[in-house]
Image (tube, rainbow, N blue to C red; front, side):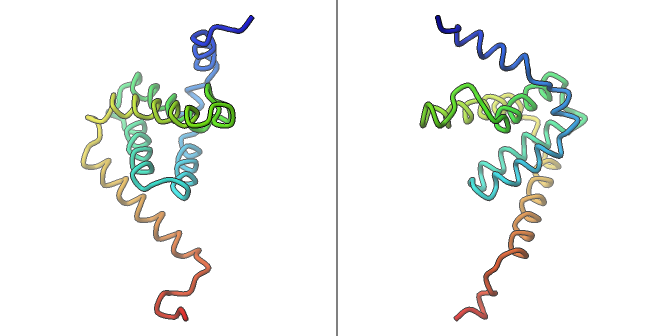
Length: 141
């Protein structure tokens, strides 16, 4: 007999150590940076906005918990609908979790947070340029 999917979801989220997520926020930022290479700029922007809202002193504990859970779900090696088993549904569940968290806290994205996101994206782009193996465009054949 199979387990109830709702109970599986509840167990999954009960077993996450959310305090550890908040305390190791730098690891989440590194994950976002890795995803920036593979993902779109807008996806990266959304993840960074969530990250900086989570790190803000003005954010309620509940919203920090919610964002931490959403970001942790992205990092977890096994999620509720693995892409390998469920195909496109495995992508949609991750997107839905991020969308729900973003929708909840988007009013908390202040101009200061926007500036931090812009600076982070600019720094990541600059560091990516520094590590390229390509010659500068003016020197290419």
